[in-house]
Image 1 (tube, helix red, strand yellow):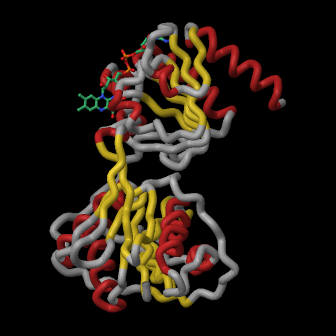
Image 2 (cartoon, helix red, strand yellow; image 1 turned 120 degrees about the vertical axis):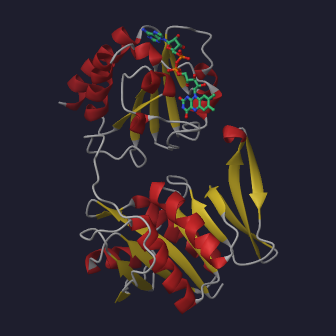
Length: 321
Ligand code: FAD
């Protein structure tokens, strides 16, 4: 492929890890072509350099953070301009909240098809074949474009980011025409105070209805903090108001792939499993030995989480200090 457009994201002053995963995926498709990146949310040239380390030859920088405007509408506008300018042969974007918002807008504007939540890319007989999970992760389907160009969003934490030797980057500040902005962001209210982003955390300690209260979630937070991880939750726990919906993992929540997932007091409903079954190691703590979560767990602890979690935390404190 001659030109692949890889969309990267910056958040809170940092390039998100998924950006490097998208670039790595783009390289796997390119076979000698050039990779052009667009970084949404930052105009830092330092950030552009980091994208160069993962294969981007040219990086277009778009920063709207200090301006009034609906960022997803504006970013879609930026992408539309860039697509018209460089005419890429394929487009890859992160399957993040922003990517899920921007990608369909871009697809609609250009009359393109879009394959979302892709976990693997292969070139078969010269054609790009995308693999994505279906039926809440119970099966996988392979898709290819029958018209237009390959356009996909990539699920975070599935493709291992790989650096290249290439470091020279051509940096371009993209000036976005502000036309037709029908919505604007007035204010952003953060729901969670955790410093670790749940979708990028290497360790996630999740609680379900078995945690019984918001007080109970403090036990999970303590363990997560010790492990440098984030706290997640089942919808059962969110519905019971033990924690915020922004922590929900699953089919209608966040899809995560941490190195370690600890599920405490979670039964393991299919809708929950859809969001965490690709975790590298799963530890389940549940007092019911028949709980379905044990079917997908690498390690199962049958017991009361209010005994097990404090024991684990204490043991880790001894080991880590
Ligand atoms: P429960 O099923 O009530 O399980 C609680 C578990 O805690 C039990 O296994 C129990 O044995 C254990 N337990 C209790 N006390 C203790 C203790 N002291 N120590 C140890 N273990 C204990 N759910 C999601 O999570 N994410 C989603 O995205 C999602 N999307 C959905 C979408 C749709 C359309 C629908 C219909 C449902 C969805 N659900 C989702 C809900 C899902 O079906 C389950 O209802 C939910 O996951 C159950 O949450 P839970 O495991 O915390 O609660």
